Image (cartoon, rainbow, N blue to C red; front, top):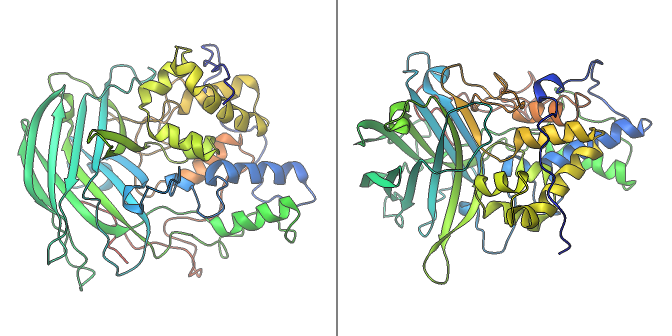
Amino acid sequence: MKQKTCVPVKETAAPLNKIATSPKKPSRRFGLRNPIGLGVLVLGLALIAGMTPLYLKASDHDDGEVDAKGRNLNLTDLFVFREKDQNPNASQNDLVLIMNTNPRSLARQQYYFSTRAKYEFKVSRVNNNDATPTGKEDVVLQFTFSPPDANRQQTITMTAIRDGAIVLQTKNLRTTPLNPNPSAPPIVNQVSGGGANLAVFAGLREDPFFFDVEQYFRVRAAFLGIGPAVSGFRPPEQAIDFTKGYNVNAIAVRVPIKFLQGSTSATTFDVWETISVPGANGKFTQFERLARPAINEGLVVTNDFLNALNTVSPGFEAAALAGQQPAANIAGPIVGEAKKTLLAFGNTEQRANALLGAFLPDVMRIDTRGPSGYANALNAKGSPIRGRLIKDDVIDITLSVVTEGKVTSDNVSYDGAPGNPAQGHKPLQPAFPYLALPN
C-alpha cells in the first residue's frame, strides 16, 4: 500500500464552534438540476453511510465487514450521559454507559452475546477539556458471557480494572432473556466493589438509532445516473427509519463518577468501547472499537481502513495526528482518506484540519459538570464534550457540521413524524436501563 504522510492538525486552525454553520440559510432539498447541492448531499450520505454493497454502515452498524465478524461481535452505538439528565429523579453523580451490539436483531427472536469475546467500556480521565485524547485506559469495565442455559439466560462475569488493578470482579450476574410478556421488568444486577455501587443490565432492547437509509440509495442511484431523478431527502411525513422494528443486544452500566475518579478529582472523561476475541495463541485481540457516531465509518469509506481502525486504540490515532512514527506512516492513508472526504465537501484546508482535530481520536468525551447531550457544548477544537443521550439526533448534527450547514436533516426523528407509520420508536423506559423494550 502506498504510504502517505499523516497531516497533523494545525494549532492555528479555527475552532469548529466558529465554523460549524454557514452564514447562509441552509436548504434541506437539493435536486438533480442543482449538481453541486446534490453532490454535497450524496457525499454527505456517503460520509455517514459508507458504500458497501450489502449493508449500511451508519453509526457503526456493520462497519469493517470481515467473514469472522458475527453480528454479536459488531458494535452499533455508544451512549454516555449523567443519569439525572435522562431521569430527573436520579442522581447527577452517576453516569450511564450503554453499549449496543448485534444490529438488525429481528423482533421476538432471542439473540445472545458471544461466549468467546470480551465486551469492554474503556475510560480515560481528562484534566483539560481542550486536550487531545490520549487513549489511556484508566478504567476498564469488562464483560464476558457464558453459554445460555435452558431459560435462555447467560451468566455475566464483570471485571473492573482501575489504574491497572482489579478492584471488582463478580461472576453471578444474569442477562435478561426475551420474555413472552414484552413489558416484563428487566433484570438489573446490583454490584458493589471498588468503593461504590454499580448496576448492570444486559439483554435485548429496541435499537434506538434512526436514519432514512432507503432514500439515500435512491439519491445515490440518481447521482450515478442509474435511477430516476429525486429531489433529495423525503419530507418528514414520507421519510423511513431503517432501524424501526429492530432490536439490539445492549449492555448498560450505572457507574458513580467517584468510581471512575479513583484517587483523583477528575470531572471529565473520555469513553470508548471495544470487543476483543482470542487469537490463535489464545491472547485476546481487539476486533471492534467505537465511540462517537458516524466518525470512523463516516469519515473513512475503505473497508480495509475501517478494519484497521477497529484494531487500534485512540492513542494510536493521537500519535498519528501528531506525526509520530511509526503511527503516522501506518495511519497516513487512513487519515488522508478522511481528509480527502472532508475536502470533497468544499471544506477549506484549514477547516478540514479543524474537523479532524475535533473528531479524531475517536472518543466520547463527557464533562460531568454540565447537562449531557451531543450538541450541548464544544471545546476549543469544536469537539462535543457532553456525551450522548439516547434521543440525540446525531445524524442531523453530524450532517450539519461536516457539510457546513448545506445538509441539515434526513427528516427522521426518534419519536417520528405524526401520521407516518414508517418512523417512530417505542417510548424510552422511565428507569435504568432506559432503552425502549424490545420489539
